Length: 320
Image (tube, rainbow, N blue to C red; front, side, top):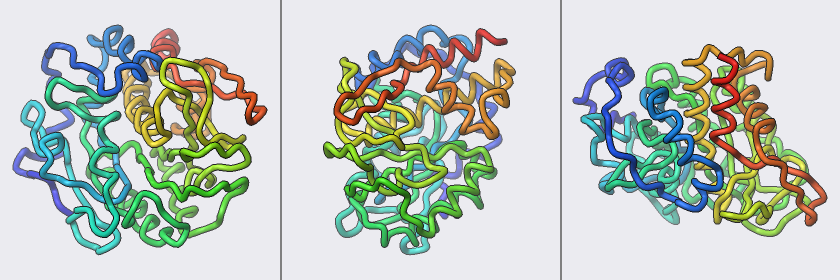
C-alpha cells in the first residue's frame, strides 16, 4: 500500500489538526446540494463541525489519476489522498488500466476541496482502492472487490476509514441478492461500524437494482431529479435512500460525504445512536430515513425517503 505523500506525518497528527477558518467554498453540485440541504448544513454547523477532518472515505472503484491537482494538492498541509491500494494487481498503484475511468471523479461530490469547490465533507481524506478494471462491472469481479473490502477491514483503524463508497454497478435488474465473495466482507464491515453503500444503477428498472447494491449489508442508494422530488433511474424495494443527483453514482457519493458529517455530529453531541440501530451504520441510515422527505414513486409503487442533511444533523444535536 502507498501512503500518498506520507511526509505529512501520522494519521494521529492529521486527526488533531485545528480547523482553519476559510471562506465558504462553492458546492461541486449546486442544485443537488441545495436540494439535500448540504449548503444549509455547512452554514448552520460551521462552528460545531469540521466537515470530515480526521475521517477517511475509501473509494472502491476502477482506479484514479493521482496526479490530477484535485487529488495531488494538499489542503492546509494535509494530503487529500491519504493512502492507495490496488486489489487487482496486489500493489499500491491504483492507476486506471483497461477500461477504467470512473474512480478519478467519484470522490468529487463527497470530498473535493480544490479551486474554491467543495464536496460535502470537504475536509476529509480519501483512500483510493482500485478493486476492478471498470466501474461497469460483472458479478465475476467479486473476487477482487472482496480483496479490496478486506484491505479496508485490515487497515481501517490505521487510516481511520469510517465509510466506503462501493462505486461499481453491473447494470442488471437484480430483484434478489446474488451470493458472492463480497457478502462475508460486507457483513464484517457492518459489524465493525463501517458504512458501505453503493449506487442502485442508472436505467429505468423498477423490479431490481445493480449488484453490489443488491447485497445484504450494503445500503442501496437511488436518485431523485436535482431540484425536484421525482424518483428516477433504478428503484426497487431494496433502495434505502434517494438523493438528488443526475446519476446514482453521484447520489451515493453525496450521501457518503453526508455520512461523515452525521458521524461527527453523533460523536460531538453524545447522541445515543443505539436507540436507532444495533450498529452505527444502521443507526445512521435510520436517522437519515426518519428525518428525510417522503417521496412517492408511482412507477415502482414504493415510497422512498429523500436525504435532508441539515434535518439529520438537527435531529442529532437537538437531543444533546
